[in-house]
Image (tube, rainbow, N blue to C red; front, top):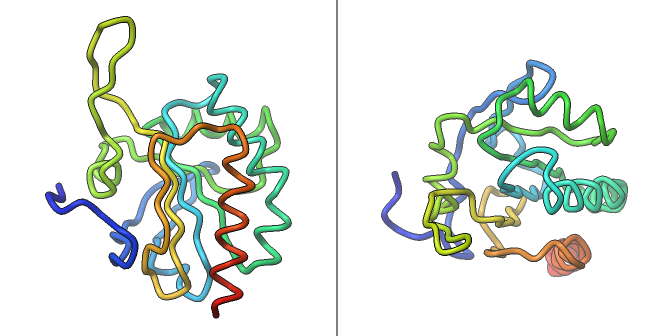
Amino acid sequence: MSNTPLSPSSPAPDFTVPTDGNGTITLSALQGKNIVLYFYPKDDTPGCTIEAKDFSEAEEAFTQQNTVILGISKDNVKSHDKFKEKYCLPFPLLSDSDGSICDAYGTWIEKSMYGKKYMGIDRATFLIDQKGIIRQIWRKVSVTNHVKEVLAAVQSLNAAG
């Protein structure tokens, strides 16, 4: 578990993790592309579905910017397979079933609903550049217009070269 919070200019913590479709992804193997790594609480819930569909609709624009979208939650691969198939999601969904990636990125936090405290995933997005460096972090994301903000940040990053 990381004690130092991540910030822009931090190296992105590397990981190898199972994905939907019985695949695996190693973050460092994607160097040479920008990466949008977005953490979401749970497959097939209202906010998570809106966010996934928004990223899905913008996927081609991200691809044109040499950018890969990766969604990650603690749901298992079987749950990801169903979610991906139901909404025809074109990008990988990563399963952080043991929570180690959430810990490394500081997205496993105490939440509160109706006065009850519990642990859960902070909806957060990390923009990682082609060299594996975090360039921007969005925490406590509101899904409305979020994908547009992330795409604009990717475009600015690429324009800065």
